[in-house]
Image 1 (cartoon, rainbow, N blue to C red):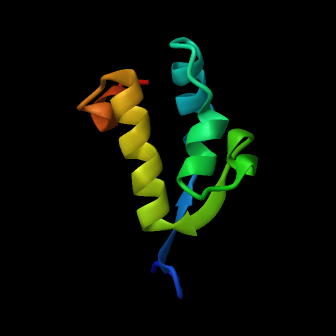
Image 2 (cartoon, one colour):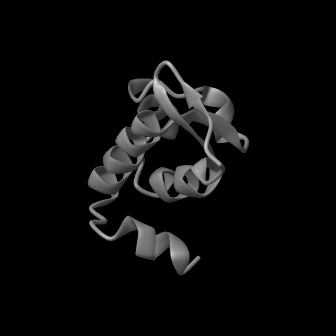
Image 3 (tube, rainbow, N blue to C red):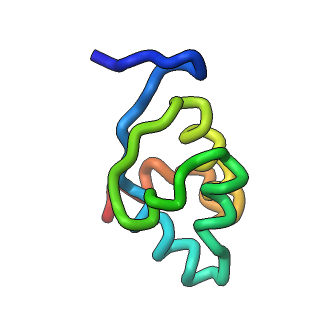
Length: 78
């Protein structure tokens, strides 16, 4: 069951290292996208827990930077 916080539903997320590598191949700094979404830079090293809207913003930004409208499917293939 998902936990809640004043900022919304909390979600465990561990794909930042994979996404960071994908972004680096395009010359994009994943740390800057994490910061813009209000997420911890610790995510570059592994799993963290954060409000779902912040993770969604990060994923939307990643998809835009990678020009990957089907980012979820791209990740599933890895």
